[in-house]
Length: 267
Image 1 (cartoon, rainbow, N blue to C red):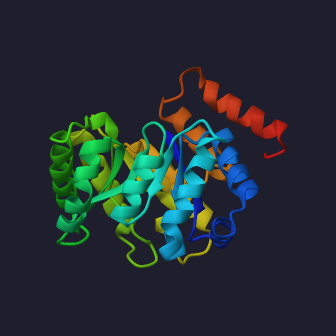
Image 2: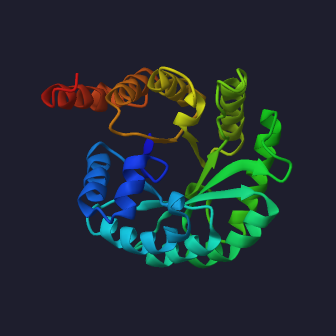
């Protein structure tokens, strides 16, 4: 499982304040903790700072790259900010994200062609969120073909079928899982990804719902998760599910996780 650490998102008050106040200690500590916990990418979102987003990223991206050894997931809805972030990032980042909306494609396609980042694509287009799995697949296929023409291989693409809040639509998780499964079977060369915490928005026991969805999604073909790598219970569910699904030969990761958790006093 590829983990994209979600803790440096400016929608969180502590992160917003740290970014606004240029609190290097806090940002570096949060990034390092996520890397140590097994994250493959650090998602960085400063969009809540509005007109200060660009100058904030010009400070934060070099700071984080000087202190962690994993790439960043650059998360912004503003194409101008994304261009600056791609120029700042050393090595190959993850672009979060591209949709099938015509305006979004037109604003980002030149950047994708020039920088060739890895990319998260969302199953969303000008018709809105798909109401059935086949249409989610259709959006995904169209975007994968488009990116292929820009020189990106399927291994560089993460497809997000977009899990919606359970509290808004009780069928949302089932639709997500059905979409995930059909996308993975039809496009086996791509990676699949989910923002787990979306499912529990506005509900109690959010972490329980998030980690339960993770286990179900792993069975349906999930390759990556945008989540909190410091959530020990989620990590335990991931380790157990990986073992039960046969993804962890000889249980090396399972035993390592619980040994390290015991040593740190986590379980």
